[in-house]
Image (cartoon, rainbow, N blue to C red):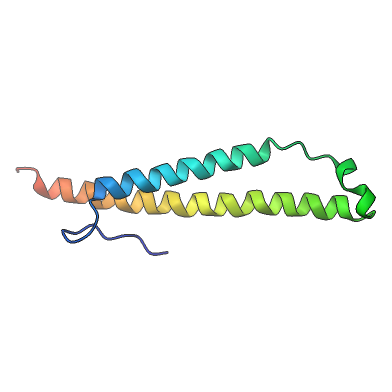
Length: 94
């Protein structure tokens, strides 16, 4: 996974951190909302006897896909924060 590199010609580290953190928070909220969906097999059984199980698998797969995105965003946030910390450490007087 590629992490943005903080440098003078690009976005500021603080702005990148803010944006990726906001994106991560939004994905977390989406995961929570999707987990709150009441899954009821009776909403699907009229489509066929195997459809409720297939629908539940799809529902769980969507949650897992969002969790994967959340983990990737967390890794990006961590990578950006590490660069900011390193930059700040090199600027401190010794």
